[in-house]
Image 1 (cartoon, rainbow, N blue to C red):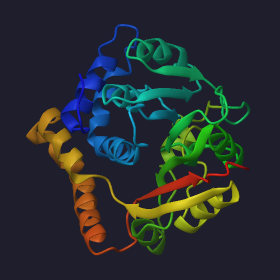
Image 2 (tube, helix red, strand yellow; image 1 turned 180 degrees about the vertical axis):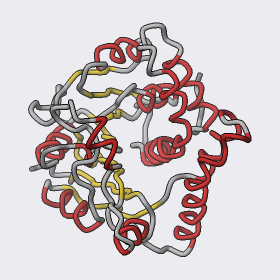
Image 3 (cartoon, one colour; image 1 turned 135 degrees about the vertical axis):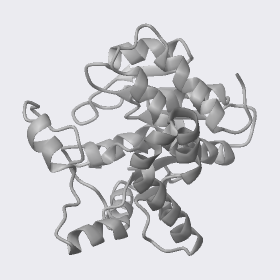
Image 4 (tube, rainbow, N blue to C red; image 1 turned 180 degrees about the horizontal axis):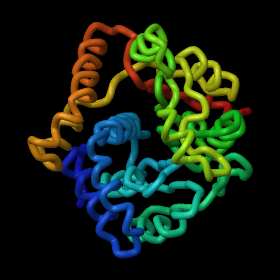
Amino acid sequence: MQEKLPTLDGLEQVLELIASDPRVPPNFPDWIRGSIRSGGGKNRVLRYILSHAPSGSTPPRMLDVGAQFGSLAVYAVKLGCHAAAVDYGPTTKVFQKVVADHGVDYQECDVGAEPLPFSDNQFDFVTYTDVIEHHPFSPKRVLREIHRVLVPGGRVIVVTPNHATLYNRVKLIFGGSVNDDFDYFFDMCAEERIYEGHHREYTRAELTAALRRTQFQVRECRVFDQDLTSLLYYLRRHRTRAEVLPEGRDLALSALGEMWMLLHLPFGRWIWAVGEKSAGGGV
């Protein structure tokens, strides 16, 4: 399956390839298939890579840090990229085998304690999406490692929740919390040694500073909202009319997000940042 541009149909095919693999644990397929509801984010990343790939006949080389079940890397391969991935946890070895069948070099790596298992100057792009907020440690060491494995002129793409979003500010005004759901954190995760939710979210200024302090030139740092198109796609394909109501909040917020972006207002729920390794390549 070779496509010129990423589409939601194409991404859904990739998700189905992974979800239907018999090696995937039985509690994962529904979660994998359901991730199409935010598939526009993955396609946004892939469109950026394809449109900014180095000119020439060599396919762009991409590394996905915090790859989970590997769908971003698998789709990148199907779009003509060379793709590698890293993650760490109890299911890593399973997904490593699954996505290897689709051309992805998936390695197990604890990025908080280990260097990335790749040589210097190896990748044109590193994707670091929906990951940095989960670290129970400073991301400085990870960003330095990403800088090391990028070629001079290579770029890291970071996507993370916007801690300063308008919606968080409204919650705080009315006495709410901007942290993860308290009952989930306090009760359902009580037996976990390390909480796997969000440990620290960032503002645009903080993310810009993090990239600059690890020797990246900041090419972009802006806010956006969840893609309304992918959420509607999910509702049409995966939900009945009776089930649409619980998604109403996300639909409303995504629709508002479309308006914020059109008006260039910094209220979105997510931050998109791109850092470039200088031609000199030094750290």
